[in-house]
Structures are given as structure tokens and as C-alpha cells.
Image (cartoon, rainbow, N blue to C red; front, top):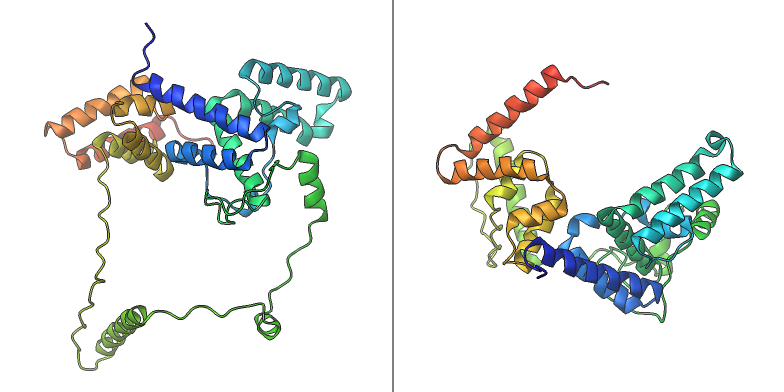
Length: 321
């Protein structure tokens, strides 16, 4: 009997979402691309970095290998080896065309691994949605206007755009105001201005006291009426992984999202499925979790153990700079 519980379930659902994303991409279905990206970025926010100038025209590895975006892994491998053989036949001395050779190697490496392939797909699809003005320029995955089709730029088109790109001229605010194409910043609200004045007054009072003048008691700052939501406490196992520098903020957000979406799946299964730690490493963290919850050690003592381990590692296995 097939077991669809635990990590098998999230693996199955992620495969379905990946297939939906690539099918929408192949059909140039903008709405389907946005919806699939929304679902996948919610489960795997660590695989979709924030948009930047460097990612405005991401390289399409499928285009590099000359295959469609919805092909399976065996066809990716076949296309990769075929492209490498063809390249080496045409270029007996690959050192003379090193960049093109590295581009092929990079495409094969990225598309062969499921997580790196998914990250590549999300980045390239988001770039196409940005170019098509389907989503806002800040990269938020919400539909502004959906055209009939959206197709990512090919590698040749990206090179042509980079070759013809001109530096952006310096923005002249005075000229823009004169032409009526620039709006002045919105004034701060009365509450924000009052709070700002209070902070400035506090600073003046402290400076006066520092220079020998009469000490003035700092004025109390009234808190905004709207209460800020408390930050969600991290599970001990996630906190341990963070303290050990196995994961960062993006991976933490991914795990927290997954625990909310799949409350019946154990956190250890989610960590293993994401590849943040090996099975042996995870057992060490689970042991530390048990010792902390049972009161045998504290989080500070765990941090001391980590520091001692790093010191010992650096002492006996120094880095080669």
C-alpha cells in the first residue's frame, strides 16, 4: 500500500504544483503562472529571493539547453549531455570560449536538481510576469493586468537588451515638477508628525543635559492605539538549526509556512524533505531538543557547545585562504 503521509504528502503536492507551474508556463497562461507561483512561494519562500536589478532578466536554462520547460528529468539529462558533446565537437579548445561552456555546465547543474530547478523556474517566471506588467514591479505575486500570453525572454533577447541598454539619465526633480510628471511626497499624518516631534524633543533634552544645562526629564511617548502583533515563537528544533547556522531567515519562513499548511506532518520530516540537514545531523539536533525540553541543558549552553566545536574545527582543520 502506498503511503502518502508525512514527507511523501508534501513531496506529492509540491510535484503537482511544479507541474502546474510548468504547464502554465508552456501554455503562456499568465493567470495560471501567477497562481502556481503564489502557492509554491508560500510553501518554499526560501527558493524565491527578493527581486533585484541582477534578477530583472534572469537566464533561462531551458533555452540554453534547447528544451521545453515542462520536460522530465531524463530528457533534461539527455539534452544536457547532447549539448555538451556538440559544444566540445565544435570547440576543441573550450578554454577559448569559457563563458559559453560554463553556461552549459551551469544549466545542466541547476535543472538536474529538483530544488534548484524549482528556484530557477520561479525566478524566470516572475521575471516574465514583471516584463509583461502582470504583477507589480516590487515582485509581489498579485495580478495587476493579465495579458493573453506571457513568454520569458530568450537568452538571445536578453543579450540584445543588455547590449543596447543605455545608462539611466540623472533624474531632475525641478524639471519633472515643471513638466507636471512628478508628485511631491505625501505629507506625514498628524500622528506621525507628533511622534516625530516628541522624539526630536527627547534628543534635544538629552543633548542639553550633556552640555551642562539643566537636566530635563524625557517626555513619555504614547504608543499607537493599534497593537502590534506578537512575533510567533519558533519551535525549539528550528531555533537550534538557526543557532547552528544551518538555516537563515528565508528557510525559517519556509518551515513556518509549511508547518501551518501541513500541521499533521512532523517538523523533522519537513526539515529532511527540504534538505536543510542530513538524517544524522537532524538526530543530533533532536537530541539537543530533548535535553533542552527536559531541562538538562539551556539554549545558552547549546550555543557554548557550538562555539567550542567551531573553535576545535578551526584549530585542527584551518581554512586555506
